[in-house]
Length: 235
Image (tube, rainbow, N blue to C red; front, top):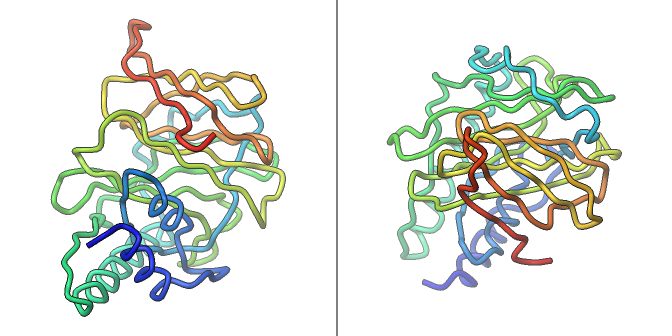
């Protein structure tokens, strides 16, 4: 089964919608390291100006509200749907699923649009982590707008994604995971600007000016030593 053929299957199954979809599916499906993840919530721009990216330490471990819990439940339903669809085509592919009962806060950033939160839940098989990122202002009852994905335990190095769009057009959100002992990331943007991000539970989050994208990321441990380097595979 080729990646191109899987792309075409997922194109048939997942069509662009303004709500109830995770925007990371096609981005990761078109990269050299393929990870087909389910879609669960609305496409939204996640961002934060460099001057205000600092994470709120006390947010780590915060119990997830119902809207976030439901987003992980929807994520799992999407994984079930895509596995069944591909099985009907005669193939087999595993899609990660989150343990929604263990969803909790990881990182929170203050932005001009209000707090931007990153929530995480372990995968049910214990091999990795799933996460969801969204603004608190976009949570309504049991509904949340935002995006995310899962990364399994065998993911090497630094994995980064970034998006922008309505309803927060002034921002680009950078988020992702690391596999090693990184505690901070030195991020260099394509325009030459730099910022340093904290790593919490092997995850990171930043809000950047709209249109910004990382050119390179250097991961450092608590002693300041370089653990991993990342560069944009599609500059």
